[in-house]
Length: 257
Image (cartoon, rainbow, N blue to C red):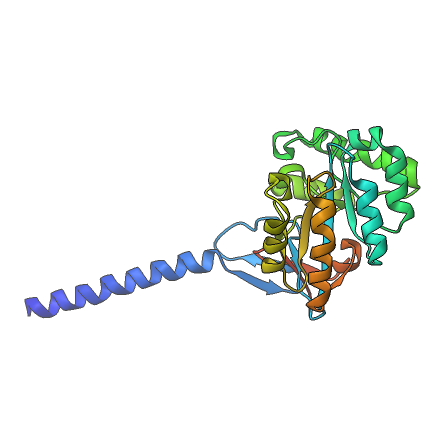
């Protein structure tokens, strides 16, 4: 009788462990609905767009511009050579220093995105300061190209729910990346090429920097490798969905069906 009771207790104990694991798993599982994502047993975390779910073999390459301008015109010439349009995220003080290059980026058909005014950690700012970071640079860009940016990339990739919601309230699609070239580490050409081509997939958003040391060397190689693999390179504005979408718990933007 005692052995039977112990055996039943052991079964109950195991069932409780399984139930506990199941609850923990569910708490981090996203359930798709017509209105977006519901996080079961946990609060929904707001995410930027890291990549896009698409059946088409499309990717976007992007450049953050904050410090320096040695290679911007060279980048534009390379993109022209391959008939590719890209996305440039510009910081306010960079816009102030290189207004003619802002115009040139836009003139050549590329997206001009907002990358803040002073390149701060956005999560450390008040609501008012976040909106100010958005608006000042947006006004500077609009004054130069007569178009207000609708794409925003947080400096350092730093965000939280508050930052994401404030950006959306101010008319922005918040953009991250799923392929980081790490070009700012200046490791050379081949490490950048290998890292990008190894990690890219349909709908990827690739991060480069306009003043990375080897950008004029690795960019043509990356483009040719991607094209050889059948990828079409488009600006982020042509890759993302503008409405009727949701973002899953990995940051992948998907169309509601």
